[in-house]
Image (cartoon, rainbow, N blue to C red; front, side, top):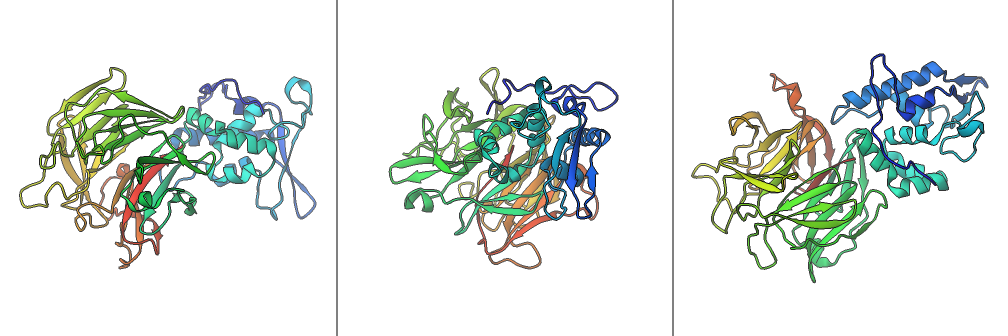
Length: 460
């Protein structure tokens, strides 16, 4: 199997100009889609319909929304996957000109009748939830899916599907596809009992899910790969740690601060590259801190909150510029609580999420969602949380960005059910906070316990 020599951003404009992407180029070959129908009549998709398909792809490429909206309309989904729901029969793709590359018909292409560049684009636009099924079709598809190439192509084309990965009480890791309302159980981590029972942290980067914890031999990182669907050991950091702040941007992630194996609060930071599986030591922060949170915003990495010692809280934030490899201190970026609230050592790290380069926080004490003003370096209340965050000092609750929406995952809060029920709530800040604009219940997971131990959102 030979894939493209290089990944280049396709030149696409929607209105009235030339399209130079492989999808549009392939449309000029007068390809039609022929499906067997129960009435023994054939349904053909004309070249005009292929242009409509490409137009819909372009519309979805430029106007993709977050949670709850599919990458493709039902019509496009049917075409790209080759299933029209007609008695489960597969379509036959034919080329009217009878030609492929070099004027010769080919039986070795991914999708018969289409050149491989166009086929790869169509497969990249298809939902990744179907990739395991595609890999079962034949050896060519198995080689393509197993190479991980489609994930790289999707990243170049700007195609992103967000899945939520959860680890709740007495449950193995599960993945949730918001678009299809589908839960998928991951294999159990082949770790020792110490790792299973110890506190863990998680991070999604590229097409991998990293889970940090302790085994009998010391710190360990287990990695789940979307490509292989298996767990494997990830290389340790140059300075292993826990209670750190972290976030990812595409195929890279940064971890900052935390505590080492002896409990010392760290000032160091490291960058992980999922493409090569290596850790790189970064310049030190201005302050050591643990129990902090990290996030990417406007292409820069930030760390806020946390404690510089076992008793001292930090209200400043720090911004790391990847290009200049330098840290900048931001005073009062995450102000402390008023007197009378619970001790800072008891509460969780700041619950923060970035949607469309806008920072939001879930206040553990007041059960409010707050929005950060970059210009004035201040916070304002925008909404109440749909579940209580103060009952466990912020622990057991997940507050994440998922596409264009904020995601709150916690116990109960839906229909009066509190025992063993985890509820996924979403809200799109662009819709505003109009009267009656409530949180949307995205999913309800029964028999999941009452505590979200780990949560990560993977977009790829």
